[in-house]
Amino acid sequence: MKPLRIPSALGLLLRPSAAIPTISPSLQNQARWAHQGAVTAPPAIPPTTPFVPDVDTFLTLIGRGLKGHASKFPTWEALFSLNTDQLRELGVEPPRTRKYLLRWRQRFQEGKFGIGGDAKYVENGTAYLRVKEVDVSPILRRRSVVNVPGSKTVESMPEEDLGKIKGFKVKGVRTITGPYVLPAGLERARVTVTEGMWEDKRGHKIDGGERRQAEVRFKKRLAERKALREKQGFY
Image (cartoon, helix red, strand yellow):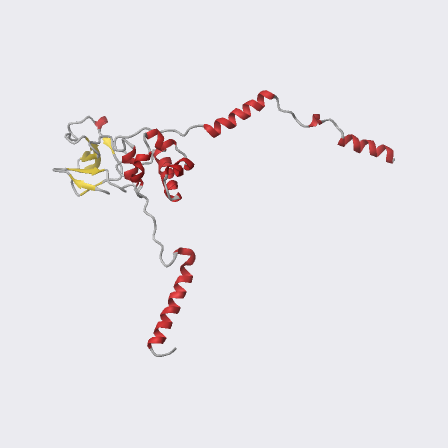
């Protein structure tokens, strides 16, 4: 029986590699091209907006001192195409600042703007706001905030040309409220590009932050007890 088993085992080991599927050269090329395309595909460059027309304005809005790096980005396309290694070579430091810039780039590409970012009519960095009134019923009037050119009124513009804008409310009859809103004459308000108005504020660590808080507070209590004992004359 053994002579019969040995050839069969050798046959399994020495069997031609036909059992292993081969990939045709054309499929290999397609896979390689697909991989190269995924790696080298340039990021999408979003268009500028009336409220964010250039690099300087974008960096001013997101804050954290990034306005000081504006000269390192000669064009809008450069701002949205450089990767993290290239940003480091340009001197955008520390790493958390680069990550913050990349995060805001992604938001802007997705159309997620900060306050005033969706304004349709902007003059020298200022968007003017007015109250739009619609009679829903004989006893109910609905008020909302719209964006119009500085010299226009709501009544003088067609309904489809009124700029919708988020983040603002009407208080009382005609008072517009919201972040960074300032009065701008009779029955209108304005919001102007301001440094850091889109900034994500960093939290402040209290007693060493979450990980070290218990240890820091324990040491503080020990120091207070020691100081109290020394004050009472116990050493």
